[in-house]
Image (cartoon, rainbow, N blue to C red):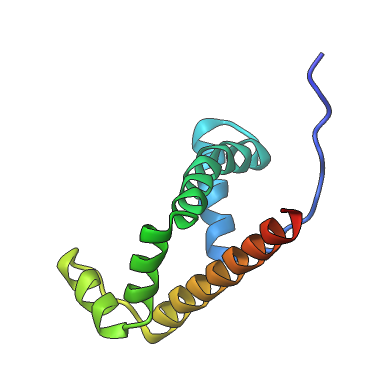
Length: 113
């Protein structure tokens, strides 16, 4: 017998919901099945990224890049992408949150020793 699943509500942009529904319909699956599959695959990538950010060298590189908008825009243009000011601000906020999490984690380790 399958293990019961947790239920929760999420808010999502209308366009994303429409895209999810199109995939669900094409695969003859429920929307929740599609979401669960996407999350399952995406979680490993996110967990890997978080582990990478615990590495001081990787963290320093990310900090340098995100603290310099010109560097970010240059990297984006090299891969034929354009960053809007909003996207750039979002990347910088994510980097700041990562630094805060890392600092909090280090404080917790110091207190435990």
